[in-house]
Length: 417
Image (cartoon, rainbow, N blue to C red; front, top):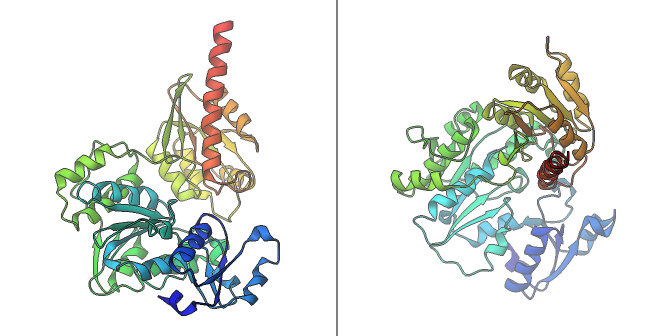
């Protein structure tokens, strides 16, 4: 491991969020002789200059590699150096990776005693290594493009669930983003596996050059008794099934596990039916492609909340989908709401009722006022959350809280009238 070379030397953890803190704990436990420092954006605008005083940097994913001025590694690379690749199932994709990774872990736990879901989904990989583990432990590792950008290893089993433009400001271009995603299979050998969603042509192209065994999604076993709705979730199930079959888990057990699997929060999560309106929280959908998938999964949508941080996405296909499903009520949040409104105007004979606001409370009141009874109100913004909210979780939680608040308020008003 590279860290063994830095005993008695100074190592800087660059970025001190959840992963940075986990890295510090791991270093201080495993390598007590290393002199460990911390630099974080909260230290001020010159925090990157602290690198000058250190021999090695451990970069956290949120900091682009172009800002690192010293030799560096990452928690992801340290993890791969610590664990046999045969114990690692890596999952990535533009959308769907959390559901697919969680479902794989859920299925594997039916046959294996120690299965750990780690990585981008919220559990830092180095935290998982501070707990006892063995050569029989399996790690299902959800990998973001940030984590893959400078990865020097490949998992034994790599799964790519989808691919479309995302995170362009971080990577600098769509091409760089795609190359970061491809890096999950960039260091594979002849004994490794690449499982891919063959509805994406670029993923098919990558399969042709893969050194090991390339496996398109299985299509002969798709359970119908599942709480995961939508065509995109059918793909996620297929990806998980393809992975599970590599572990010789019976189809009977796979079907049972898929049927029992609970959808993850803020991913087409049904908040409930209130005043005859069915509310869905799909706050995780932060790109037009994933919002289109959500609309197709819920064709009875009559109100939708759109907009957020402007990442330069094209919203023309989304506008066409809105018109195709005759969605009559639209909330537009800044900043991308302006671009979405412009795209809607290009659609002939489509004039939905639109509310432009930066207030979730006003948006929810709008939905209660105008959504047809028996129809769906969908939060699926097709844009990242950061223009208004801290992240998608804050946005989704705010939506759910206000939906329930106004449902109770409306009920009290009716009772007293």
